[in-house]
Image (cartoon, rainbow over all chains, first blue to last red; front, side, top):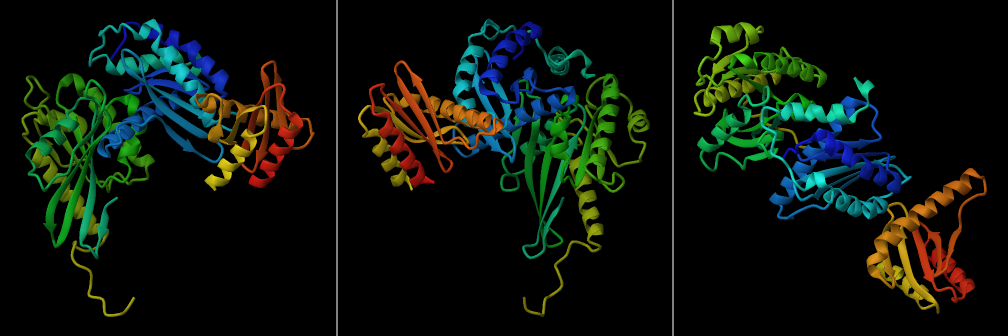
Length: 161
Length: 209
Length: 115
């Protein structure tokens, strides 16, 4: 579902994401929509890398959801992957207009408990934003691809190209 | 990569439908799924966006029955066509035994077709495939639409390697099974060559374990 | 193992003045076993206690003061004492009038038993 003004949405998400990163001390945080469109990021420096993470995160979420349906598990709350030095947290959350996905990558400066603690509040804060209350259906199949790219251009620093 | 289980006499091959966004890859699989009888197909899984664009892949398992004494299964996949999803496209391409490149025959889509074909070649190279060895069939889809590019012109524009090609109109089903038949034959022949023998039972063992 | 952990929490909860005891997975910051006045607060207490303990430990490390052994917070409404027992943190919450010496000794005993 596409909202009327992407730049406005991205702008509105900036502070909640910043606060989440500050409180949890995660290294990287992304917010993507269910199509993998990047809506907010903190901690990335390369434009192409973040697009990959965004699309893969949406794919991982879609796969997990399909798995849940196939195994009658109903719904996963979050996905947590533990690596040697880094961990990944991926969780969907509902807003009045659509489902979004938070991806957080952290090391031992943070913890799963800390991320979970602030995640609920973060999700609620996003859901309360006016940009997620009244969505304009102005998008179309033709603008789908340009929308994906537009998100990147709005979010990444001007020199990432 | 094909899974060949000699003791169980089973072969499983992966075929990936590739091409630009909205060229008809998913429609191919949907048509196959709608026509193959129960018992010869598994559940089709589609991981798509709200606007029905493939987000990760579509997946359809098929049972071809016995070929040269081997129970032969095909796993058909599609990839997301939009440029943005290259990372997921590469993942799906891994382990492919054959590729169907679904081109959109509309003139305004030629640039997208070429870009997607270049992308396929790049990704195959990156995944360590010898693109000369990979079985590929080109499908010129959407032939039912008015004013599409003539087949000869599509061949000139896209088929510089002289690959097998088919025309199709996936929404009506025309050409869908022809394409599938062609790619299956290519894949199985390639498999035979790889193992330097026709797909046939292993020699009788006389020694113990 | 679960009985041992439950017994540890019960031992600490029995100390006069103690209003809550919680064993926390130190790495994940998640509650393992506990008894708190408000059980709903367990995830928050666990996450924040683990974060505070880890960061304080790192600060001591950087200051070359050796390994953090115990961490105590004093607030107007009570105290929080945290120590670690082999991958688990022992978190004890007590009223201001609790015998803090006893709390400390028993927390350390539990830590040693769990290590």
